[in-house]
Image (cartoon, rainbow, N blue to C red; front, side):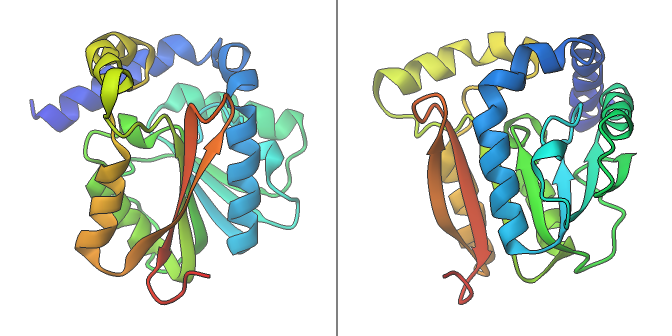
Length: 217
């Protein structure tokens, strides 16, 4: 069994366990990040792809004029998201599908914005997934990520590294570094980090906007 497949199966087990209680645990602490991410995506355009939609906590924050497609590797999470979209009459949600972020089935240049809310640190091969995000993005669009992203410096960086094996068991990662995303953009040459924005609580989480070079404003 490949390492990628093994990690994907581990995540499926984690998400199956967390799906029934995910909203109660994370709705409050992630609300600020979800709200700001949705607003930035809507400012980039109307056709939005959300990768790692989970139980759909972000869906209600998108303006109703948007057309939102959500994917997740977990069928249990997608089932919850579909229930939420139906229950809350979220008509702007176009589709919610089980899909691997490493191999999106969408055509090139399908979306104005691609959002990754609190998921990039959990994707086994994040650079490969970001390449897929870039492929399905229209010219002038944005990739917008919200996550726990440290810089690895000082005592906080040491603590993040030390607890990484523990928090993985609840579907999180603490050891992922901002510079890994910035380095991906620099290697490609056609994206740049337009903003790195702190969000609640007290900048513990961050949002990164990636725009095509020459189009950042």
